[in-house]
Length: 293
Length: 241
Image (cartoon, rainbow over all chains, first blue to last red; front, side, top):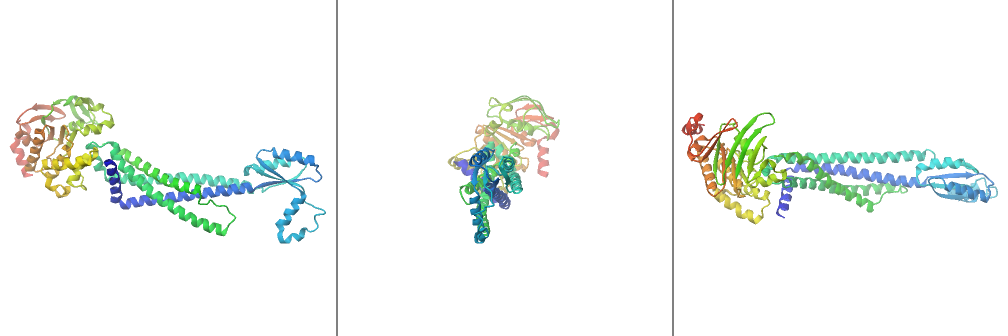
């Protein structure tokens, strides 16, 4: 109990004594965790956007005229059996025309009279599990008997897949870099703090203090700095993200964004935990070599 | 309580600090360790509280080989040895009271015990009036008294002092030596390393002389020290400087 009081008193005293340095450390933790938090949110949003776009990418398989019901059934079964296919929907000539009319809206008059001699083909609309399976499915389907033509967003899908992979990678890399920088900055701060108290540490060792007794106040100091910095970062991320979401959804309401839901608060929570961890790691790194008196 | 068996100490740079030291200090003894600068006095003391390890030989304290202690046992060894330094090593940001209390805090003593023992030991060294002063407000002699109070507040069985009067004028030095004698009279074993030959000669205690890393003399009582011109000449020198 008494020791605990001593640890906290020493840690707080040390922070107060090196107040500018401590402020700088808190600031750097805040900035780095803020950047980390935001880049994580960007990754989360890009992932969600990718999921959304992926799920909306379809393959349209147009069929030759005059296939029998049995042939249609066979074809549908064979398409469903292709790897990655999750849904096959049959769109008859009639349905296709209706859809087209709907899409044209006020200009639907253009299609007047086509019911008698519908030029649109029957078609299957196919969804795949992932966007990168679309190209393979399209190729396979094109070689099936009774298929006239296959269409999908050629190029767009490939590019989207490439971009999402790149964004995920960049997010991971920046996460690692920024995390390392934060550890380094805390360890530098604690090192200076240890350095300014080296004499005191030496005396403590002569008086018979255990290594943990010497270490603990510094560990606590690092964790306090990490906690202060990360809590501030979490608040900033919370406020900043709310503002970004407001302006994005105002301008482009059709883009799906990650809301302030459970995942979002889990992210804030992990930022704070990470700050504590970074503080502890930073201080342990710098105290290690000062203990051999 | 403390034995050296054939102890040699060689530093990594090849300097031989101690050679074949055999020494036995009994419980309750007062031992002066004298010799010129560089004779190995400080090294010998460092071997006792395990700041250094012997290259050869054994140092036995209370039946335990100090070299064999595991690193995490060292703090508990040091709690049974009070250490006094030439440069006092007080914490400038703490008061006299806090400096002494520090030794107890470090070893996890309860608050009530600290409040009881610190004033007691400060009274013993004659500093109860200056309890709340900072080290910078004290004279050298007073600072050393704080250092001694801090060293004995744990009631260690052994007190080790390295040139405790090295930074003090002769009168103050005598007061400090007197304090060591009183601590010794209360039952604590005391080892004082010094090159203040004059005081050693006048104090009628066991004297171990170290020269060039070897023990060249181990006597009780007044000793005439050949190459110093005797106690009188030495004292004049110090007063003059």
